[in-house]
Image (cartoon, rainbow, N blue to C red; front, side, top):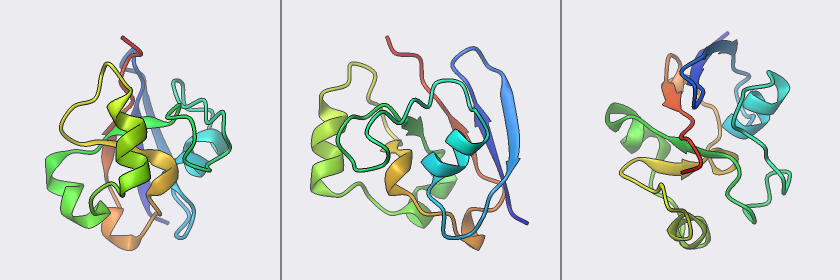
Length: 105
C-alpha cells in the first residue's frame, strides 16, 4: 500500500498507509494527524486541513481550483505549495509524498 508522511506543526512524523482514492485529509483524520482538524468534513469550506505540498509533487497534485485558492488566500501562513488536503486525492503517483502541516501562525 502507498505511504504518506505528514509532518505536524511540532515536527512529529506520521508515516501512514494511504488508500488510493481517499483524500489526503481523510487519510490524515483516520490516522489522527496533529494539525489536520477538517472542521468542514472535506467540503472545501474551512481551510482547517491546510498542508504544504513539496515542489517535486506539485505537478502530480495539480493546482488549487478557484474555491480552494480563495480559502487559502484568507490564511496568514499561505505559501508556495499550500493546498487543502481535502482537495487532493491519493494516487499511486503520490506514494512516498512528505507533506508539512503548517503552524496556525
